[in-house]
Amino acid sequence: MDAELKAFMNRVDGLLERLEPLLPARREPVDWTRSMAARWLRDSSGGYLLGLDVRLDLKLDDLLGVDRQRQLLGHNTRQFVDGVPANHALLWGARGTGKSSLVRALLGEYAPLGLRLIEIERDHLADLPRVVEHLVSLPYRFVLFCDDLSFEAGEGDYRVLKSVLDGSLERAPDNVLLYATSNRRHLVPEKQSDNDNWQVVDGELHPNEAVEDKIALSDRFGLWLSFYPFSQEHYLDVVRHWVGTLAGQSGLNWNWSEALEKDAIRWATARGNRNGRCAYQYARQWVGRQLLPQ
Image (cartoon, rainbow, N blue to C red; front, side, top):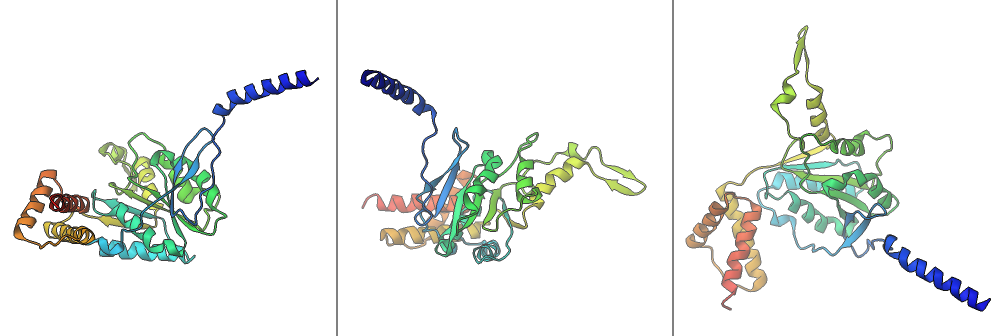
């Protein structure tokens, strides 16, 4: 009997060795007391939250020239953290103007009060109900953050997002809010062909339903914030801020000069845009170049 039992156990061990690679890995739940942010990832079991080690050194004061947007989203976030009604927010406009940075700065501002951030990719938006299941019973306030949200013509995924935001029979939990950034105001491209079937019947307009369907998605966001391209003066103000910040962190003595200003303008001209991202990149390049001989 001992020999038969040993043979049986060997067969079980061999079977488990073959099955283990096929089973989903065991995932530890995110420790929200230590992780201020997480990312939703898909796997064979559906998906899971991966805790992120994020830096909270970006301050709201680092974002120049977007005072109105900063104030409105800051108030909305404070309402959410305090447990009073708040809106989903859509930050749209020119690239590199501080949309994503504003969300990250708000995390640094309100993380001590219980705010947490979860990144979710546009292609994973269909998982939103599953993500919410992980959060509904937790004592934190979660902003689901989808960066660079947009949908191409012919894609139907945006209808899933519409349902999750406002159209589902199941009420969204009070501790979850969605912030999204996009270069498009209506998230879905609008074409002239969308208007081909507009008709006038007894003086009443009957717009094409495709247009209404597309615009209805952005309507689900209660707060719209617009970001515009930088003027040259705005761009130089941001360059001056970041050069001063990075130089101060590095112990570098520096002075704003006409030569530095012209160099910053040439940098932006070569890249074909003036925005906050460009200004920050120039500041890193200039400060690094000054520090290199040292």
